[in-house]
Structures are given as structure tokens and as C-alpha cells.
Length: 379
Image (cartoon, rainbow, N blue to C red; front, top):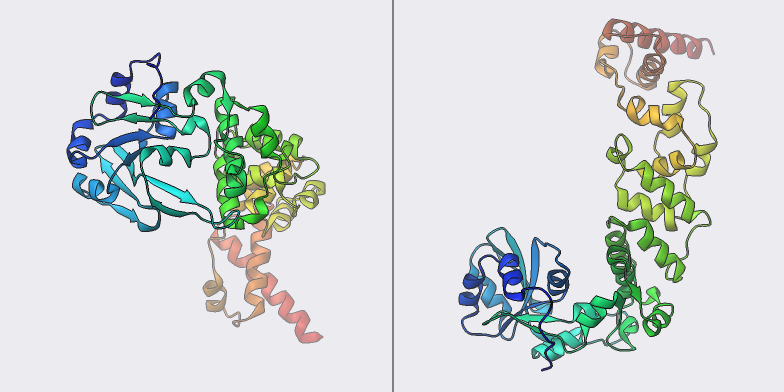
């Protein structure tokens, strides 16, 4: 098993900081070889802190998790389990190899050693391990540390994106987060990835992970640039505008940033263009126009220039009456459409500043209900 030379950091000290209760983990392993793996090693070498780590056991990972105590969630198909070690969440897995029955399918797994476990991973920078059984040592059979130092993303084999095309979306996430670039051969393979072989749920889940990154606009832009997902025509400008809009309240409280950014980059178009063209004359017109719109549509419309939506999200959408249908029926309005019409008119007048307080609301609602009922009766 090839092992790299000593990294520039103090590996033992870094591992001790990453896993404060390392001795307890070793005791739970009961002599089985255990390794810190994947993104946890990558981030350790980059000096990045984590609240979760991945550990591979050459043995029964679920049994190690049970020995750690606490609540254990097992995923039998992939021989993985989750456990809590103090404040640290640990994903424990039995070392395994994978085969893909067809492009984009979930893999079939079988027990294996660490060599095969590392060889099944997405990029060389995630195919490193640190032995935890004794003095920590770096295991780097695919020269991941060299690629990490060079800021390169490199797949482990040519069929990587065929087996799992969502790895191409993951490449965009890592490129945006770390400022890395795909090395030339990997870049060529990226553009051939076919997301059509995976379920829309899996692709959407990975897109949401990209969109949740601090550098999400860059990551989503790379997905468009690599032609993994077709962007909307105005994607670049809209992404920038939506990202700036959601930096603070009130808009950061209105819409989930990842979903809004995905809509800005790849949405097929909803009501945002229509809303952006409107210029409501009154607050009640604004509420009526925005009613039923998705939060993402509102954010995109604002990014496209619908400044009137600032007042809507700050005030208009939260205005409510102090009265209800029961108050109108208690005052003699029969149950039916007249109740709804009365309440709607009272809300309109309240939004436009024509009335305030419970008594005025009830008076306006009753007038509207009775006036309409009178006209209906004459007709």
C-alpha cells in the first residue's frame, strides 16, 4: 500500500484536534484497522475544521459504531453507520468495493480492503486515508496530496462520470469551494457526463449541495459552462443579482437561498418576468399580484427589477385582519360568498390605509357584503 511522505502539517496533532476522543474510537475498533478517509483527510491537510468525519474500518463498521454507544443509524446496503463521539459526528463504514450494474445506477458493494475502498472514490483529493490504529500516517495511493497542493481535481479512472454522473456536479462544488480546477483529461470527461442516467431526485439533491455553498454562483456557473445542465439565457446576471439580494433581510428570510439560486441558473421561467413588468398603484394591488407566487419567483422578480416587492415582503404579506368570518355571520351576514367578499374588501382597504382597527374593519366588511348582496338581489 503506497504511502506518501510526511505532510507539511503535524499529522498527529491535526488528527488529535479533529478527533479529540481518539482513544475511545480505537477501543471501539477492538484491534481492527481503522482509517480517517475522504473529505475528512482532505480538509485536515487543508487546515479546515469539520464537525463530522468519515472513518473506514477493515471489518464491521456498524459494530464499531454500536460499541461507541448512543444512537446508531445503520444503512445496511452500503455497510455504513453513523455514531456520535462527543460533539463529533462520525460516519463509519466497512471498507468496500463497488461495481455499477449500469451507468448512473446505485452501486453493488462487497467487503474489501482499504486499497479497493480508496480506488472507488470520486477524485484523488478524496482518495486519501490516515491510519488511526497507531501513530497517524498518511495513505495516499493515488497522489491525492500532490493534486491537493496543485489545486487540481482528477478522477481515478475514465469511467468515473459514467458510473456516477453526479460526481460531475460534485466537481463543480469542490472547484467553487476550494478554487480548484479539473486537470485537462478530467475536464474533457466532465463535459461528457450524462445526468440523464440518474434520477432527477439524485441530481436535484446534488445541485442543492452546490447551491448551498458560499461560492454557489461560481459552482452553478461551472455546471452551466460544462454543459451539465442547460442554463436559462439570463443566468449569469440573474445569479449575481439574486445572490446579492439574499445577503440580508428581508429577502434572506423570504426564500431558501439554494432553491432561489438554482431557479436563477436553470429555472425554465415562472411568474417572475410577469411580476417584474408590473407597477402596482396601491399596496392592495401588490398583494393581489404577488398572491400565490413561489418564494423563488418573488426573489427572481425582485432581482429583475420589481422593487415594489420590497414593500410587499417587508409589510404587505404580513397584514391581516383583526376580524374573521364568524364576526360577519354574527352580525347577520349569511354564510356564503358574501362573507369572503366582505373580508376581501376590508383587507384591501386596510392595506391601502383607508381603515384601521377592528371596528372599522367590521364596518367596511359589512358594507361590502351588504352592498353586493343588495345588487345580487335586484339582478
